Length: 306
Image 1 (tube, rainbow, N blue to C red):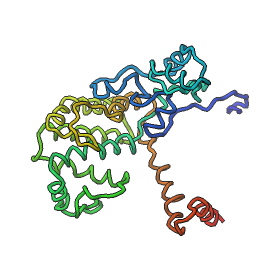
Image 2 (cartoon, rainbow, N blue to C red; image 1 turned 135 degrees about the vertical axis):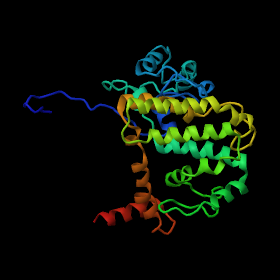
Image 3 (tube, rainbow, N blue to C red; image 1 turned 120 degrees about the horizontal axis):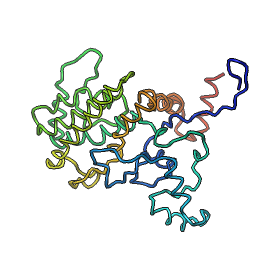
Image 4 (cartoon, one colour; image 1 turned 120 degrees about the vertical axis):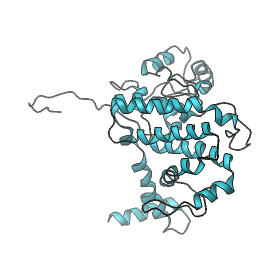
């Protein structure tokens, strides 16, 4: 392309951000499950209070190069990758992309990483601590506030909870549990809430990053109270868990470094693309006869464009 002076320049599009959820990021980062795609942490280190060394492109590519096995021998190659907890992908798409750095372009994604973690973990801790009936009652008696959603029947019976609903619940959760649960549990929950709210600011400074780090450290300082209270349980067996093997919890350690490298995480949210599911899938699907969805959805979209 030409620069302002008319000189031809050989340019490369920089890979600044890859906006994906955790499973897709792990797949593109060439790591297998229960392994961080941003740092060298594994599931055993997810609950650590400090950030582990970055998983750089050089590290991953050197590990792949050291595997002396033909990738076409799938089973043998996959077994050989286990030593480095790699997924078995031998040629990452970013391997020859100039300046592409996985530890940087896998930016924090608020919709899935923060709000998803909030609903899957924070809310569940509070429900177990108060009980379904009590937490629903407390949400139901919150006075109406203009501009804020009410939950007249509580939150435990909500179905298909979307990002908007998760944000609405976040506004009230700390107030709802205050005075009824262990002070350390309330502090830990509030610390994560502060972390999310501060990280979503459109403009952030070095002082903001320090506050974000401090909020996360405060959570780690008080988090053991959640396990001691028996609030951390398995999603299916309800067995008490005494570990912090939560991938999205480990990813919180990379938020402040990412802000310093590529700016506010708010610009890397998947809200826009996720909302497209409503416009191009759910709404057209509601006009079908519930048979052969794909063809009818495409026909509906074609008609809308004409």
